[in-house]
Image (cartoon, rainbow, N blue to C red; front, side):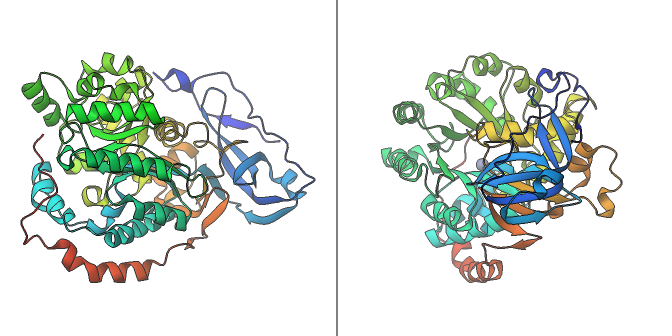
Length: 478
Ligand SMILES: [Zn+2]
């Protein structure tokens, strides 16, 4: 059995270090037929201290949608399997998780360019969103799912409107998703009730691939009473909360000037931080928020989508290092394609590493292995699936992707983690598997008819983009 190679100690990151161990692989049940065997590949694995390692000439055995074993290619040869994928020359990774997006906004990709945040919302996005129909949402989500499957994303956390349509697309296309029906206080109690009704109705649907959350938009669009009522509902029904908060420094400063508290302190005083909460962005998290977050009664996580922060010229980014020091996982995200222009989590991984080095002024911080830890273990925790996803190991769901590193831009490989983070691209993903089902095989996308989606969306765009009515769904005023 080849040795598993784990990386060097990552400075400043206690949980990445530990003794060298070999990954324990449960023996596959040779007697009965496996559903799928992926063989001949290098497999990204984690050791008991969550350090990233690579197991060469390995095989992944899948049964009932879960990983049954990670074994050697030689041992896998003897196994009976309904389906066998020869993955020689490829690396098997846990599927990427997009921890915060608005999938249907793929329909608005490139519509509002080179604008400050308030003009992006008030002049373009919120007027256009007042035209949205369930069909637009469905087509946008289908396009987004196609893009994500092709980029090796197997799960996404979505926060939008008309989410029944998104849930239907997820069920149909085979992805995994964590869904929440967004609401503003301007909708009255009805918005919150609809979000709850959606979360209860879809929880565990699509064969368990859909999990749900309550989804208040943000502390600047949902008032304290509404947030407090949301926290109550979360506790009563055992639901997590997914919302935008402290998105940028302006929001934090405005909140301090108007209310004397930061957005994170609003989440604390309304009880939201006592729930399991996924906070999108947090680039406006400031020093005084850190003890508040440390004391949070629920499981708190933050999703970072760095491309949009650069594009909006926000002065800060998610304080990944400070959050790490207080034990808060930071998952990778893209936000919607209307601000980010792409749903490429691979790019979010590379940008997170680069921006963290630049912001901290430390080339040793956020190494490639740390970036892969964010992409796997921390992203899985961020969407509340830390036990089910984030690793290729016995008992985890079989959500994995195969990446081809034979291209000139990824050769030679001196450091596989660095090749994956800084040289490989989303287009190098050849095969995407969710719950043991192959959604893309050798670049052939199986569940979505992209030309048909693009054509119908194109026909609908004039009505969707009309801003002549002067309406908007909300007004952005941090
Ligand atoms: Zn967002």
